[in-house]
Image (cartoon, rainbow, N blue to C red; front, side, top):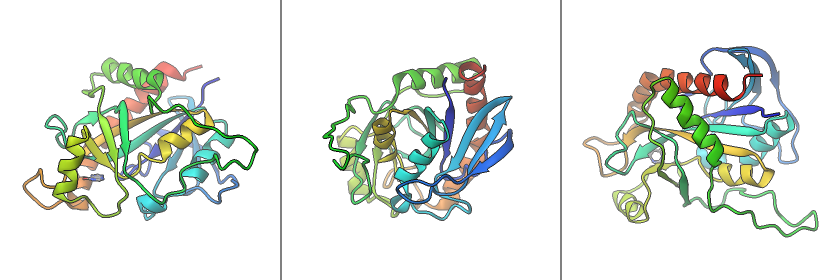
Length: 249
Ligand code: HPA
């Protein structure tokens, strides 16, 4: 049986329409998750919701306990994860307000606890990560977007930087040359940890600013919040549509 978990990003502290049933703080071998995991009903379907940056949202991207978050979600029965990520736009098509389901990523993060595979169970593993996101879940998200007339791009390369500072203009030029279309700080190691646990994982990226050196003004949290507030309803509508199509029992 498929069970959806949603990881909220910057600006997504609550899931619109979620009727709360319970709140969980499961123990994990890696410590505590970013906060309580809310169990609730979205249009009568059970979903679990976790805010990646905590509540209030004060945990910066490089200090998120990604291992605990994914372990905790799986321990509650979650089998599939939709992650919400605020990103900067690098490619010309990735203007503020654009919604995109990335199909690839490039990992520029460092020093994060990024794997469950430390050999302690006597196994040496190398997960296949050719396609970092679940194709099936990506297609389900795109079908859900189509069915409720939400404009959503179907592919992008998501470059994930360490943060919490934003990038330099030269770093963004390098990322563009590397093939990155959008830039965020929380896509990794979340995606690879999900793969290690055998969880289907896809990301919904909301472009909230032009990446460094590409816009007219300095990048500010206020400009990101403005877009996030404006577009939050669209993400919520997309999730409800997905739930209705994929998880209704
Ligand atoms: N860079 C990195 N992460 C981000 C950005 C950005 O421009 N916007 C939102 N998250």
